[in-house]
Length: 97
Image (cartoon, rainbow, N blue to C red; front, side, top):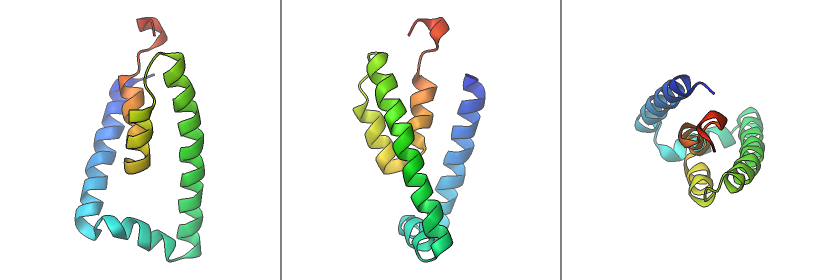
């Protein structure tokens, strides 16, 4: 895994997300998407994807001796930041998980 690239993606996405919340507000992230069928489809797709990622994350955290709950809570409250931060802090196979 390319951790520098992952860190750059996380930082850029964090900056963009902060700008969007500052520009439109946190509630608008949900109300805007759910006000149109196309937005609702994307939102539902993201919920399904997050469910799949959380399933992997839970199993991986248990297999590597990590507590999955912090990552689950960050994911449920902050979306992709949970898995991104999990991957940033995950030891590689070369580091001896």
